Picture 1 (tube, rainbow, N blue to C red):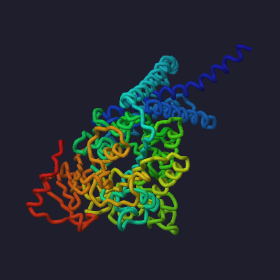
Picture 2 (cartoon, helix red, strand yellow):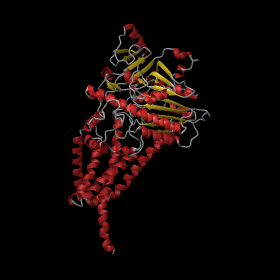
Picture 3 (cartoon, one colour):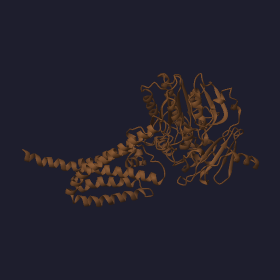
Picture 4 (cartoon, rainbow, N blue to C red):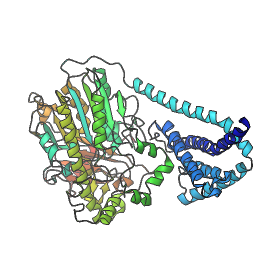
Length: 606
């Protein structure tokens, strides 16, 4: 009986061996893939802008992918025995193994990577298929070390992240019994002129308009930079963009105190929920002071995104068309943030909370869901399915590369996306209120920068300091503590939110800036003083060469009457904000006025 069972047992082991080989190749490829990502980040002098989970999600995803391909060949091979040959099975696993790190090589065409992977797989599979006995012994020797290295690396990264989070918190105090909660809702890439709360804006945000009547609306709030990282850094630290090291590649330094640290030290529980996986991340230094920093929710899309091969395959146009998928892979929705925030707030904890939520609905690609996709004329109910798909495909293309009429049409999609976010945030606030989580809560709604749709010949953001890129919404609501129905027409900066929130919450803070409470506190006469705000844009030669920033670093100064921009080539643009509140036309400045404005614009440290 034993003698007859042995061949069957040996046969089953032989069939299983290609799958084991595929798993080992997948683990090795994943280590090479993550090493290539790390090397690229070092060469580009920027943080490794992936979730720290990639050190275990990438090996897991590649293992599932590689082994699934081999298993599929074994199954199909029952009808086509040629596919079950060792060289074919080994070659399939090796092709995927070589292709995975090759896809991360810059400046090499995709077709060249495919040809190179085929050639390497062909030669290595030929050599290995001739030495199947050695392959078996090699498998037994490599299996344990590969698994151990994968586990150690993944575990070490998770431990390092946990330690760095604890190190950034600092000592915690005890909050006052009457301390208010603080909720900051940041609508990424939302400009003021596309909102209902703006004079003459489209009716895109009726819920925000209604909510804003409960508090103070700052009609002329300005961002400190026209892109995410430095603007968020200003909002978190109270410093101007030119006072911080943050650029397109450089993260916020570890020594600058943050708003979250101030609230944590005052006895608050602190949590952040970021849908912006590009810059509002732990890797870019924005997590300091937050006990929880939820930036990369784990799920099927995150797993897919951790595999370079799957990500490229599933975001290719032919596959997108088959799957009818046109969104940014792995984008967190307002609904995801809603659920994550509620889970955190539902945990037993008597402390008041400081919560920050970043929403990405209005960021490109602009893909509003029904009924907001037809609300502003992007397309209509009678638009054909093929035309809708074409228009949604345009939303994934940089507007700089589109004809002007198509790029301007995207503005309607953008405003539809803002309207969908308005409805989602309204649902969040109503849910929090219904659960009693908005009692004694300061709520701030603002943005980090705007967006341009052809004004001054510029599209998108991060390439100019024009008003459309800097003018953002800002609303502060705290019933019975902040006056309802107040509108402030003076120019202010989101840089002053840290000083404002710590003043409202009455917590000790050394964060710079001025409290905006002066605009509704009659005892503070400084509210009537003229104020000037600043913005900066740093030139990076590695970015697409579009917009005024291609001439070099830019600085801007704005007050209640003027916006003056100093371009990198020394030229000056000026806009009269009294006569032209939307900044649609350049204004003439005489030499004396120009010199006076330029003397007050700080020089960039870069």
